[in-house]
Image 1: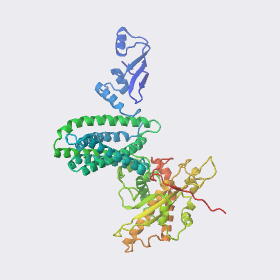
Image 2 (image 1 turned 45 degrees about the vertical axis):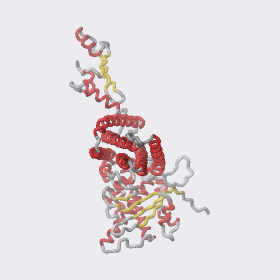
Image 3 (image 1 turned 180 degrees about the horizontal axis):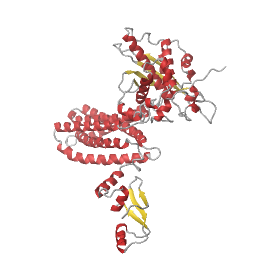
Image 4 (image 1 turned 90 degrees about the vertical axis):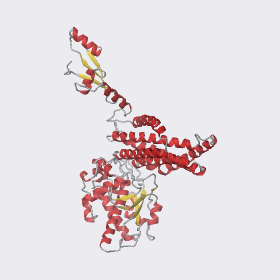
Length: 549
């Protein structure tokens, strides 16, 4: 039968071919009618060909030799566990993450069975002297401490789970494997009730913390994987749960075969370490394959370090003009950053690049922490004057933290955010960028949209540039045989000069003439409203009330 005719294809929501329709020729011979009716069940004006028929597969694949029936059924089964509209409904890194995530879930399911067997031994299964009351007491103690740990961890770290989702997703499995290790180890202390209860409760606390980290980071990853225009977050989350269910089921079935064989202690520990190593290795590969398009603190360190290395490596004042002329080619893309970012980077670290030296730490918090660093004779008005009378949207100060060897440069930066003042115009609320850089900022730069605010990004970049400038000054002084910092810690004039010069570099990137934000967006970084994830958690904001006559 010929294929050179008008064909209408029908595909399901996943894009899989279901049926084809085409117009029949006006007349058939008797033999052709019989062949056509046997193939399609129809000899009317419109012919319908299903995907189960060989001719339908030819239409679907465009090949004379389509996949076998077994392959087609496997494809259908696979699509049961994939989001509707895959692959268009998710990001390109989705399948890489899910592949390694499925392998690590399989290994974890078997390891958990080993831990569960040890826990049953701990609470007295097989022990004639054990009572159900003691087992109940152990369970209640574990559940109580576990739920308290859930509340405390969510209170302390819940607001950080989204911006550090890759770190917390991997950390969750580290904690989970530690709890499994304690479960398997606990029967060895069966003669000591105190140690037995301690290990049992510690394992419960770790499992509770793992649950909070895993659920929070998975929610952030689900949002990342879902395509904004074609995907559904609920569907991606539901299919992820389906995948976990089938993988856990397969892991339990495999464990039901493996665990009874492991009756000796040494083989049990060997298998456990193999499973844990597989679990952590594949989980690391999974989170490393995720290409985040949002800037958190660590990714901001990498991106802006590479920019300055390209245009102003010596941090000289003469190099400021070249910063405003950066192009998209000088900026690392999200995929390039994902290849070199550290999964377990410490919080608040000011590191130059991905593998460069740690120059200090920075934190955005309350003004009280900033005030404690100020020189005794410095007033609030003097501090605000360094930051455009507070119009920058933040203030910061720093102090040196000297190491014992006095050979390393460690800077501690503390910042506080300032809320934009009320302009009185309800139709147009000015952002911190517009207040600081001028009302015409939005017209001069295409990236400035209503509500667009780079304040959180600017304060972190300012801290990074400040730390780098001090780092270079320190090492230059040490190389020339000087005393290192050159001035006493906390000297006002030195600090004012460093803060002002580093602020000019930030303004060269984000000001009306700067191309920093535009270049970032052109390289694929998400800078829209609510997409900046630099400030950790919920922090207080300042409001500056000017003097009244």
